[in-house]
Amino acid sequence: MGNILLVEDDPSIRKLVRVNLAKRGYTVSEASDSGQAMALFQAVPVDLVLLDLLLPGLSGVDICSWIRARSDVPIIIMSARLDEDLKVAALDAGADDYVTKPFGQEELLARVRAFLRRSYGASSPTHTGRVQLDGLTIDLDARRVLLDEVDLRLTRTEYAILSELACRLDAVVTHDELLTEVWGGEYRGANHYLHTYIGRLRKKLGKYNRFLETIPGMGYTLHTHISDG
Image: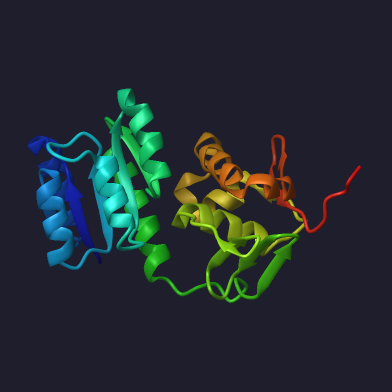
């Protein structure tokens, strides 16, 4: 099912999450501080990380950066509502997703399933080829994005969104279509969630975000050409 590294200093939360993951067949390694997290990450196989932001020792943001420098394993942040700035910093450091405490266990499990499905599942046969939009290159075979021939570091979520749009150039991809393809059918209707990631993707695309159009009330379109007028 997958090996999950759970990094959480609150023993009650850690136990609840571990028990629910174990019931679904996942193998869970537990860490209560940054030192244990780093040691376990290097010692055991890890397919996904669940990471609290406020930890003894290094912060969750620091751990996120440390992991991302070594691996592209999915990282899901577990943050309290008061940790908004830290959550943003963690996403900037390479985290793929977040859940806000207090969270429902089914919500967390759905996100775990989505990322592990994306990691283990075969790539869609339509997700091949190379899309060139001025200086923006989307290489669907190599799963790389380049801005003016320089690699653009995207999280798995950001890449998944962009690749879905790239495979349907000039078409309106609805909110629900994107949510279903990237996160799964259980996310249909969660438009506010999608808006967060589209905003981050736009920021990383820089001047080339002009190719990405928001269609109010419907979804998004990645255009092949942009009129100068």
